[in-house]
Amino acid sequence: MSANQDIYFDPFLKKNEGDTAVPSDAQFLCGFVLGLSIDNVPESAYVRHTETHCELWIESEYCRGVAVAVPKTSSVTPSPSVLMDLHFRSIIGYAWPESFEKAGLMTEAEYTAIINTIKAEREAAREAAQKNRTEIIDFAEELGLHPRPTGGGPNQWAANCPGTNHHLFIVSSTSSFGCGYCCRKGGPDELRTFVEDRRKRDEERRNQP
Image (cartoon, rainbow, N blue to C red; front, side):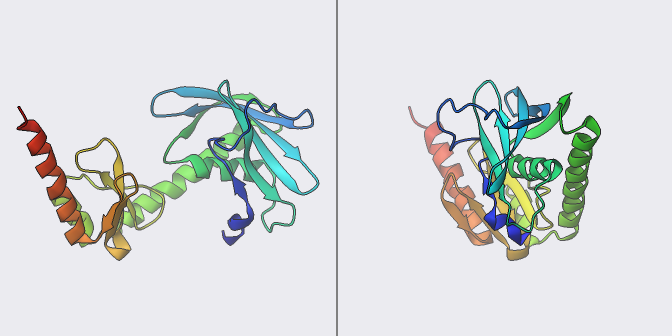
């Protein structure tokens, strides 16, 4: 939604200041487990209302801080469910909310409804992406990059970045790819060159004495 441009996001609390405590006027929303690629982390969510914003605070054993803040002038109604929905959508691709642990202002049924809605939307996007499959997706497959829909939209795909352990991203509607880590982007020709460069580099490394 366009109103999201007015909303503050810090999904992994990189902007939090040291050991900032959850404010005493924040209300406990729920406890849940966040699934990361290397671990599962128990987290607690809190809602806090200031004069200007409605804030979602997230706390774990590692850090705590404001993950989402919606201005009270925003067209987005900042209910607890909306705040959690915004937060979960901002972390998907890097983490996934797992089991519900403890109820506060939010019940387990409300938590589960948010997760199920996001799951259904992402599955629909994956199905749409398969129907919108274009030449660059077939090309990436021929190059052995194993492209697959991300679920983020009907034209959004991920593929293996050649010679690395991370992903590159493909937009099928524009026949373009990009890898922020490697600072490479372009169309099908650039993708082929990228793969050839990496394979040549890897071969040279293998042949080193």
